[in-house]
Image (cartoon, rainbow, N blue to C red; front, side):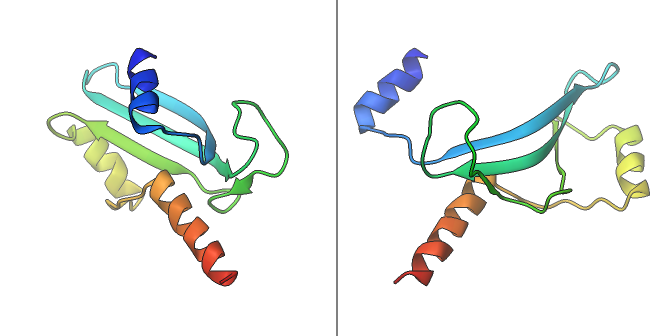
Length: 112
């Protein structure tokens, strides 16, 4: 909390966007450095930025989309490599914040 407060004061930072999502997070019982998260209902809004539900959130992805993030420290365990291969998963890069920023810029260009 102190670090956030310091940065806010030092850079005169003010909230600009509210981002929310429903997350299920898992850790491996056998591999200490493996963490997998599943994010659904990724949404944002540019007003009413307080940390509570508010109608009018904008969906970032399609309704049934699931963003899966896998974090490993050293290597992917073989069981995970096989599971990813079996479902046809491929590595990609995605940023919730970057995608929202791009969407905001697109909307602003429409009104110029």
